[in-house]
Amino acid sequence: MTWVRLEPDAPRHPKMMRAGFDGWCLYTLGICYSAHYLTDGLIVREALPALWPHAPAPKPRQLATIAAKLVDVGLWELDPAGWRIHDYLRYQPTKSEVLEQRHRAQLYHQAGGRARASMASRIAGRFSSMPTSSEPADHAGHHAGQQGSPKGIGATSMVTSMSTSTPPAPFSFSVSKEQTPLPPLPVDNSPEPLSNGSPPDALTSQPESTKPQQPTREEQLRTLAQFNGLTPEQLRDQAAQLAKSLSDKLKVGTKR
Image (cartoon, rainbow, N blue to C red; front, side, top):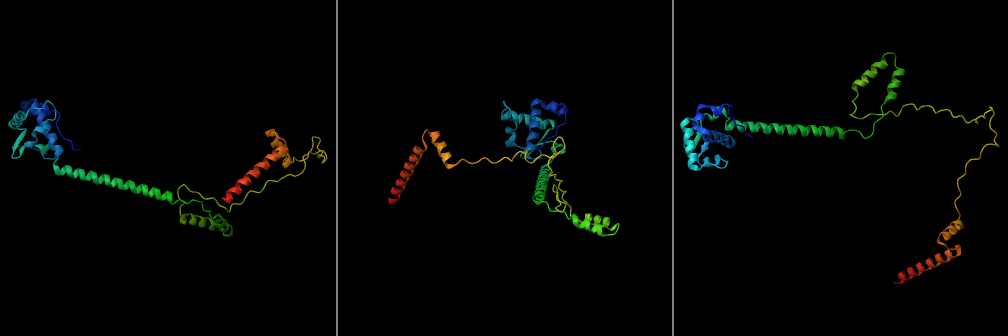
């Protein structure tokens, strides 16, 4: 977007006061037109009626009279194509400057977009290269080297290994599988003493709980018959009839 420059006291300038209110409006509209279409202050004759977008707009003959008034007071100058705003390039940027500024802004936005895309790809690459499982750290070798080396060599080898080792990936940690497990807690299998300090008698100890026994087939049949309001014999007869009916249907289907 292109901006125009106007002095705060422009309406009270002697030329503006001689041009009148309509002259001030047409002069300001001409500056906006030239800045928008980058004409460097040129207003072609065919564009004069379109400069005044507000209604009620003056008629073309009235606009020509106002333009002549602006030429008389020195705000506009005559041009073979129409009119040219006096000292337009003194206060407003030229077409080449505007285009150069737009080109620099476009390059700036493109560079910013590429930088953001590169940063996003680097971040994505760092997270995609993270190990899925932590590798065990070789603490046993350092420990063995420190025990077998003279005084001072172990510290030097540790500093050297720390300086030459590759730093771990971000947000990752490793757990050594060579760590010595904790010793198991002692288990006291001796019987607990009674209140008087004597061990409990084996005869007075309670027996271990046994698992509940599963019901037999006859018990299950009896329970199912009782649930349906039948006797076990009636339930067997119905089951036999159902099995025979299914067998007959299967035989008929096989013959077809």
